[in-house]
Image 1 (cartoon, rainbow, N blue to C red):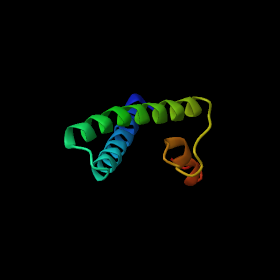
Image 2: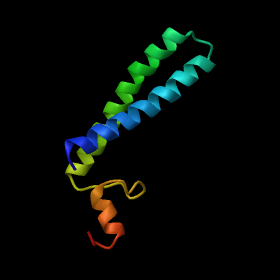
Image 3: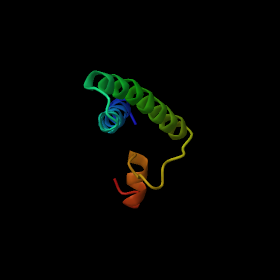
Image 4: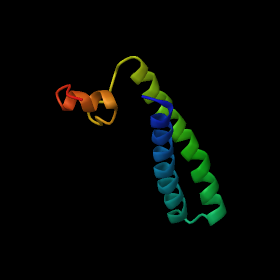
Length: 82
């Protein structure tokens, strides 16, 4: 898995976390600038922790059996045929 894979993964988690956190902050009654700031800050923290954790486990050969989103796990699903 190359750098592009991990950048895509980071950005996917970042966008998801940003949307959820920003929406929740707005629902709690905070103004837009505060909500966007909190969403950006916690989105980056969340995406970093998630990506570093997944990278750590991937480097040790431990893959998520539920996600099956890594190339290695997709090959296992197809029976090793590439």
